[in-house]
Image (spheres, rainbow, N blue to C red):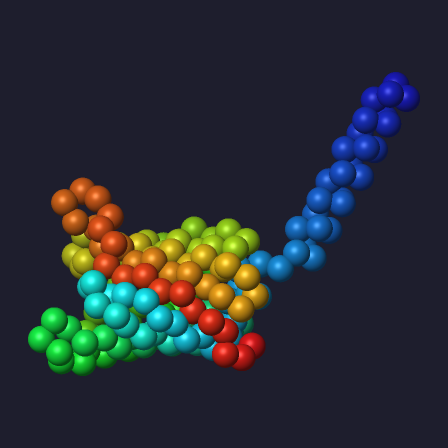
Length: 163
């Protein structure tokens, strides 16, 4: 009986320690908040990117304000802006952009990354992967779903401007 009690006490102690460590470790939300500028490629062309992540609507959502710029193959500058609202408790959200697209989002959030699956059967579909490299850098990869697989179309590394 004493051994059983000791085992239960030890398991409880380990559970409490693990819960405390999980609560005190930084998570994706804490690390991504702020203003970021990035450089990379979009559709095979050099591109610049900016994103701002902030708590919104009584902290019920994380809002992403996003912009990319690149020159297409004919030399014409293309600019796309978007806002997205993420509900990290429900792992879902919506994306709105200057193309007029409204895309539903499904999220997979980890401590240092978030994968966003966007679109549905009536819209384009794809995924975006946000990977926190360190407190000052984020790597982002964009894929569109075509012919049964994810095809990359954009990639950038961002640097934090301010938190």
